[in-house]
Image (cartoon, rainbow, N blue to C red; front, side):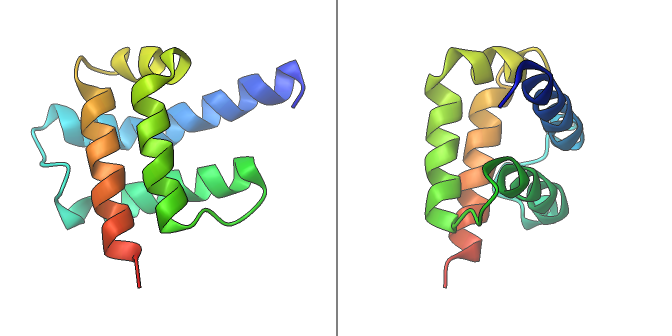
Length: 100
């Protein structure tokens, strides 16, 4: 991915996570299934970026990466202190709901 592609991808990531950050700020539980539309949008961003399907297991694994990779956690914490952990929890709950 070129430098401009990377910037575009992270701009799209912010667009995909901004509605989730609003739910976080409003006190929504990360396990609430009302987050499905926002998480589906985020999952679509992941699949577009990866250029392949993101299985529920891979999506849960990505949540773990978000917790440990400073580049991601720094971006997410800029959207609200504690948002990284909340987002990872929401992603894992969503992945569990998507599992067959």
